[in-house]
Image 1: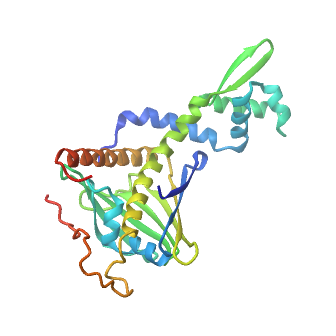
Image 2: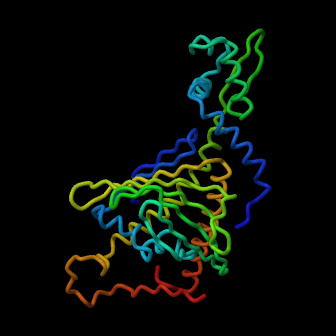
Image 3: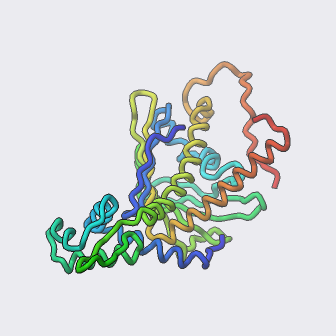
Length: 139
Length: 165
């Protein structure tokens, strides 16, 4: 299997994204600023931490593209970016697809009559029309 | 269809999928325990898995390869960290080189499987898949997309050949 080096930049970006989301305060800041724009001082009043600490969190979030900052008079306003959040879910969505396929195939196997290895009484309907299990696909 | 719940936790790079099967845990455990059954669901029909070694006891390992439609073999391995038949299985899933030796330069995934009886004849299976890094996720996705694409191609070929749907 080839590891695509051209995806390195994308992976680095996604790493910033997941790192930014790994902190509860930062997740809360994203949630708050997605519904309505907030100033850093407004945010600082909501959390039991200093203005500087909140500003640090906002900087990490902005670096990951999760929020954008802009000046409004003397205030620094923060707005959440829903696009970046969608990107964070994209990878997990695709991995969920992989498992959905596997689970569908598991379900198909479990819907078959019990395999001969089981100690359950063998069904007497010997002439079932189940396709013989053809393991050998031509190479 | 059978999937009842999907939970994503981007902060923990974890995916949790729950599903319900109309069979007791002992039967569901067999599809993990029996290598011939495992081969039938781990990869799609067009990217089938072949299991070489298979030992689901704690500390045991599973080695396998998956064959692409072009005939390329992609090797992988599991290292079983914890197992309690028929209810619990935890393993690391990783990539291997062409000789089947674990390639530890490539990231591994932690998979936790829980089987819980739901009445007499049903099981809720929960699969938790955790990734150590974004790179690991990208890699699994790349692999999964290759499989997904070849599965779709296989279906088209079957249609063209006039096979019954």
